[in-house]
Length: 114
Length: 112
Image 1 (cartoon, one colour):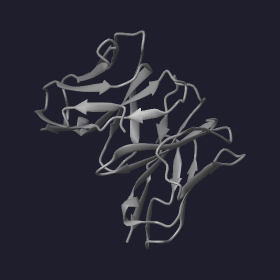
Image 2 (tube, helix red, strand yellow):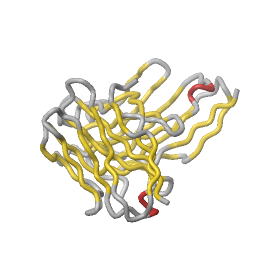
Image 3 (cartoon, one colour):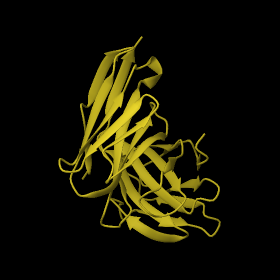
Image 4 (spheres, chains in turn green, blue):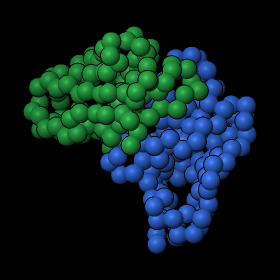
């Protein structure tokens, strides 16, 4: 158990809908990362937050947004969902924001768009 | 685009044999990390090697780093069926953006 908690574990929704994925980082970790893993795209970095502020941005679509709250949990909002958004979404956390940190992954949220 | 590319994409070996997988990356890095992912599960950190290190060991794992060739290798010795998983390298560039960029992964299958 990494200590990173993601909910929901599985989600099925229709195209055009909006969903919110939630992540609780390990106790004491200030950084949260979101990744998308699909069969054809591998593991894609989406975005990183550190102590409530956006720190780095990757290949995150404009239809997607994220935030980190004062209690350090984070949410990833996916809107106007398309079939291609079906993927496993991972949250990860680390103690700090520098490059020497190990990042710890949650078990992921499986999103299926039908 | 991916920073790291693992090679081979898939590897099948017998239990007890050694498994070697390679990672190549594009830009200068601060450190490189290897992770394991069991099917449909989260990634688990295995080992971190810094850019000024050439080799690191952890149990049955040996990692090398050649910054001149922008490549790293992960050796798993005396493999076990439980080592069956996908293995990813992750790099953090020195540009300071703190993005951990993962490669495409090597799918390792260890046959009992």
